[in-house]
Image 1 (spheres, helix red, strand yellow):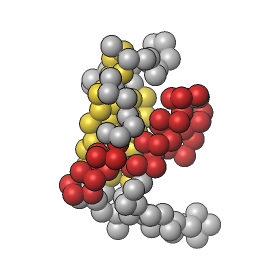
Image 2 (cartoon, rainbow, N blue to C red; image 1 turned 90 degrees about the horizontal axis):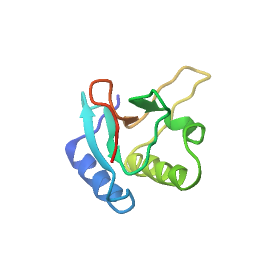
Image 3 (cartoon, rainbow, N blue to C red; image 1 turned 135 degrees about the vertical axis):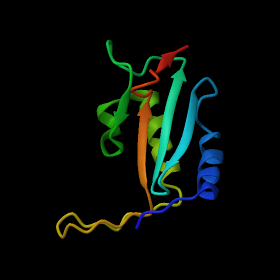
Image 4 (cartoon, rainbow, N blue to C red; image 1 turned 90 degrees about the vertical axis):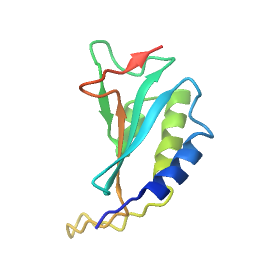
Length: 116
């Protein structure tokens, strides 16, 4: 059963601080001790399309959302979020075994992303 605690979140946050641009404002949150959420609140560049206020990024297909330097940053974010994680899942036998789930969000439905 997936599980993540505050101690692991703190270790991951220290790793994120090493490469996430200082102008980006984000939060890390844990939902039900099972999922780790990276929530990007604002940045100095626009990461959304016109008319979008928020986006949930599929961590398996980050390259569909970003390119160039931004893609490199988000790939590093994905690696950092998986710092203490594992994935022994097997889709052919419908077996789900992960340390914890990961979500990357840009803005939220009730708090839109802001370009500053």
